[in-house]
Image 1 (cartoon, rainbow, N blue to C red):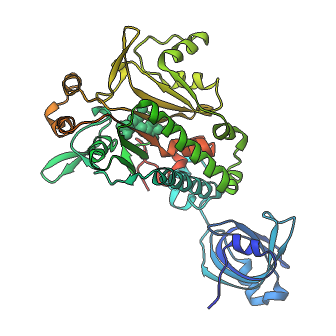
Image 2 (image 1 turned 90 degrees about the vertical axis):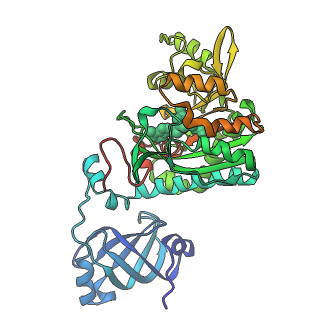
Amino acid sequence: MTKFLTIQEAMAKGKGSVSVRGWVYRERGSAKVKFVVLRDGTDILQCVIKPDVVGADAFEIADKLQVEASIELHGTIKKDERAPTGFELQVEKFAVIGPSDKFPITKDQSPEFLLDKRHLALRSRKLQAVLKVKAKVMQAWREFYDKQGFLEYTPPIFQPSQCEGGSTLFEVKYYKTKTYLTQSWQLYGEAGTFSYEKLYCLSPCFRAETSKTSRHLSEFWMAEMEQAWLELPGMLDSIEGVLKHMVKRVLEDCQDALQVLGRDVKKIEPSLKKPFVRMKYKDCLKLLEKDGITVKWGKDLRTVEEDKIMEHFDVPVIVTHYPKEAMAFYKPPIEEGGKEVCLCVDVLAPEGYGEIVGGSQRSLDIERMTKELKAMGEDPKAYDWYFDLRRYGSVPHSGYGLGVERVVAWLCGLENIKDAIPFPRTMLRWTP
Ligand code: 4AD
Ligand code: MG
């Protein structure tokens, strides 16, 4: 049986006889020679087919090859500076495995058309590169926390109540009643923490976001961790640690993908080399004030304000101590300068990629949480199981969630978060 090499392996071999297979990425030719750029999961390779080598009949077949036909090729590989990836295959034999009709995706098509044809657009080098970076980001997350003895945890996706506000819940028909798709594993992560202490999960999350921005998806992946005995300062170190580890791994292992994406790695490197910036909400207000932007104390920072702050920095900024009135019910308040602020954190990415992490120490105050849930129009009874966690051997604990696609959009330098997920779901898009 023929042993096929990936294009990457064939180029590493660099000379001699090889068999490769994949899809026609580009084709051009004349009566005397056909150039096929072959694409596989690893790279692209220029292949040259000549009638005097393969025979007239085979050449006729080669001549009719269309973009995205799948083929197997056998021949001699050698260095060639003029070829797109520096190597060329002189084809001796080839076979068409799956012919292709005229591929609908050509140059200069609208983003909407490309989203309609997403199942085919996934074959683009750009999306292929993004998928590689995304896999690396998730792998780096697991690696970082596995090494510290964390356990991967599988949260429920159907959840009976909100965690991040009722307005973005997706309601699901559930037998004869209704339930919701998860917005975050957090409340369930907290329950597990009193068993194993150190947990993480990588899970899809769902939010009925009505904002049509380049940063919001209705279905996205969140990497979350929850840890017993952990307080805010320790968690900030954990967040900085894992983000640096992700950047390191992507820079080490995804150079090819970053190059395909045309990403200027100099813009990411500071996040590996320099400490992140840490500041409180009140310092953000002061910084914004200097830029001529006044935010009334108590208001959450909006995208425009986050972007303005980030104009000053080339590394992520870890913002803590937001005002209680703008924060979720589970974020514990403390008093600072006569005001209630929370032991919570948001991390803002450089270059205007927005909030990539949100988390907090967890409130242990049943009475206060009950009051806030009621004020939001929630029935505190639905959270009684969650309050049980405080009734039976409660301990301080903290956790956070990292938006995987937001981190990928940042590291890849994407214009829109939709390209950080194979099949984006937004308010206006849920097919194919
Ligand atoms: O800040 P969020 O809402 O925090 C939580 O859900 C916490 N319960 C997490 C926790 O403490 N375990 O969401 C966390 C992160 C955000 O910082 C953002 O990066 C991402 O999830 N995110 C989204 N990403 C894409 N599309 C959306 N609609 C997103 N909403 C949140
Ligand atoms: Mg948030």
